[in-house]
Amino acid sequence: DNVVCTGSETSLSACPSSGWGEENCGHSEDVGIFCQSTTFQEGDVQLVNGTGPHEGRLQIYHDGVWGTVCDDDFTNAGANVVCRQLGYSGGYGSSYEPYGQGVDPTWLDNVVCTGSETSLSACPSSGWGEENC
Image 1 (cartoon, rainbow, N blue to C red):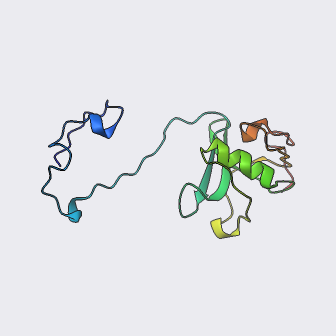
Image 2: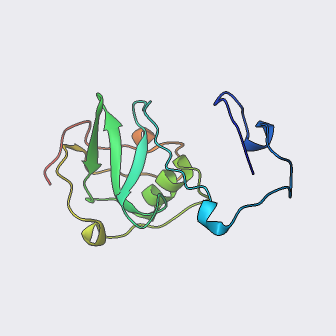
């Protein structure tokens, strides 16, 4: 209770508070947080329109713009690369249909990952913006 952070702390436990177990709160006072990254780097990936950050339509960041990846030649090896890039242990591919079509540029097509790459942008493809989707 009474947690007062300045914003420079590296963990919540570093913020001054009433102490562990010292509280007079009801669940109507539970904290909710929405985190958003504002610094994206070339080749970053995200999954959008899913039920959480672990699923959704794949997007990749290029030239300051989020864009989509065409599903031509995309396999579970590519899905594993994307999921590992996002901090998960692995994953598998899915159709875009539950997540809606993108309106962004299609940045990558014919992406053929072996599964050993550390990022999606390291996988062979037709090249940035070269697509026939």
